[in-house]
Image 1 (tube, one colour):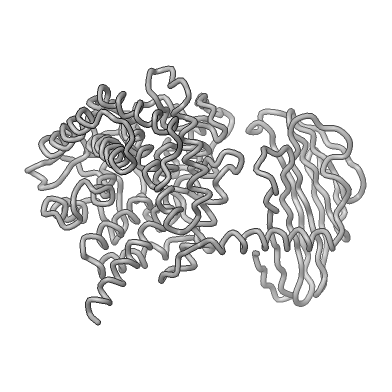
Image 2: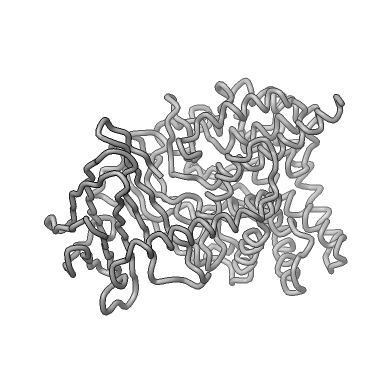
Length: 535
């Protein structure tokens, strides 16, 4: 709900979408907008200007009556319906309306998208006031019912709930696949070229969300993604010979060809604008560890066939883990032996060994342990910099990297290990700016792209979690509370925070919100432990 306050009165605009009852793919989706005045009298203006195929395709307009107009696109009809006193007018190929409401009056406008074969009158007949009210009640009841499963009772209930809802909203119900963000092309630096399409499902992001969802009590969503992930593992691999691609469409389709939309100037002239994502073809070895990490988050590891698929992955990884790759941040500056990638391959071996032992599953444990221990030794010997007294981004640099904040969470090192605390101190000195955390320094470690970027919100929340687990609880709480002040007015975060505190990058970003949940859970646990020790 958005409230407008003026000398003439107070008005509200309420937007909602009723969740589809079935998890089957649907051809029709509807957005409802209700305008109402609670005090005085206010004028409203409605503008509807759709553009199809990124503005490259034309459309036609059909007027059904004063309150109903249809846009006909190449593969989608958009039906605009309005209740009295709204009268829709054709404005070229667009639609507009002007109307005034007095205190106690309301009007609704519905936008229905219908794809596939279309016939008859799209969207059905215009809704009545009672039907709009019933739809609103259904939407509200769906979310209140869903939230009853939430187990979180901690100190930051409102922000954690908002993040959980955001993760749910970013998930494609028919497959259980979450997208990274709802947008494309929003820049990491205004006026720069770091403009990507995030409307896809990353193995990494989805896998790391599983723990947060389970901890909150949303096991159905966690298990849905695990099933989607298993289906990717059961496929015939990728064209490059890898068992997994780093990202997919929500339906599991692997083709994400990247193109530049030449005629779009971009947000505040941030070009090029890209649709699709060429990073899908990158080699990022960490995804195998994140996949195993997700699968291991449940006592139920699935049927015998599911274990066979995982065991085949681990056997394959024994032969293919020791390779340079592009790393977690999808840099376009060449392959390196990234420490984080090695860390997550260690996780893959470690979790598989644990599952095999716990559930008495057949496995080549001798070979798996040898691979796990080899990765561990390599990270300790080559991923550590005596000069920096810290673990570093890759084996040929002294550059720090905030992705390694996950080291304690995955159990590679104790959060109070001397080498880890030294690494945490080094990150605090170089990557942290007033509690906000940069991923790495692109000037010190060229990533193949021009320009700079803001602090990375995912890493800021990972920093909070690492501080809390390392016993620096008061510092962690300060950093967490300060980070929360950068959310927008409804508690959402983009990918990054800019120099002036602005949101940068695609929005809202699932990775940021899952890290917020993990940070809140860790901080609550450590604060409770500290309070018990003082009692």
